[in-house]
Length: 568
Image (cartoon, rainbow, N blue to C red):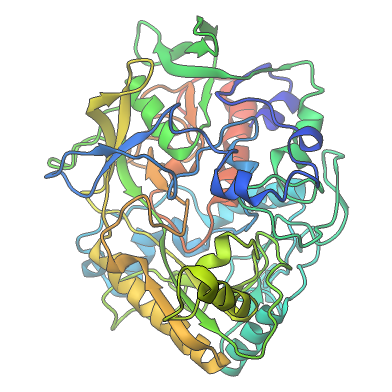
């Protein structure tokens, strides 16, 4: 947002709760591979003592504070969660943006029973130029599967039409990826390399920033990147942005809430507090809320912008349509095989999309949506991989050491990353019982798996079992996350979605298609909080593309004539 707006000549003040982080001093190659510091102790994430949230499965329960991160990975520095992300660089499919309309057209309205699904107010075709811009800045590595309507062998044949090939070629296959690719080809499926924000070769992006090739070290998610090869803000935007005289950055400064003008239809700036407890006010013609998904919703509620959602009446928009990411996995072991898992990177995987979104017929199925199914080689970090032991293995002592020495090289995993559909009872609100260190209410999450996502998860994990069995894997460990009630401590995804969603109807969405608040027209809310539903993909690139689209609407249209960009 700041890069786009300052390049257009606007003056931007960015306020960041965390501190500055720089590649050369915070995570050079000698420091970045510290798994204990970054992956286990989560030193790059926001500390729980700074802020947490509360959680419950349903409204009959009293929410309790979350005490350790798993599902939620709040950024805690300039660059936010983009500093420690893995790098999987997906576009959402055309269907993901119009689930409600496309499902009714193909299967009838009954298919959406018990779901609170709505269109985004923008189509994939409208988003494509902004996806392309984000990929150019990021240097994304991959292989197109649908280039200007032409299906390209080796790419994802199910993807939406793209105007250009990826900026850099796809990453290389590991041994396990080659097995997965061969197996899925034999089954008549369509494998392709996952698009990656871990660059396959050196690259200079449109801003003039030089990025280096990935070394396949395996220390990506939860870590920085000492090679300047991961598409983080530190690598591809901050070197240019920090030199612009119309950009001001306030670090270790926390925004408490936006402050409304007397008419209540606009805001005049934000109230903040510094690290040493000094309160201040930053005036602004336009306020862009660009925090982590959860914080975006909380700031809207604390600023009293929009009507809080009520699950009983269904009225209200702030907090509505919270949804998550429905995942499952199958781990197996290949005797007398060396998988060399230490060769990896955050987005190193081969995937099939044959069972993702609406790429297959759901007529006789009791769910909508699906999942990308991938064979990945994202890391071989020794502490993290200690749980990949074949069934019956000891968990302590010399027998455990022998089992781990054996299974480290022989384990492989098929991962299912699925859609998540909203329902009426899943939402975000302010907690009536708990406050933060400033005396403001914590955010409260009310969420559990809905039946649609449970049914979908079972279906796709069964497909993963078939793939793994055909590949020759033994001693299968099968995990369906939906087999247990959802809780924030045992999750395989940080992709938390919704709560301040976009759409074309102000009665069911907090934002219009430009991420502009329906209630205060000079407030824009940028992040995965805007997604009305989750696709079977990582959200980062869609967040980035929406940010570019919103920023251009601000400097090309809004600044010249302030007011609503879409009629409600």
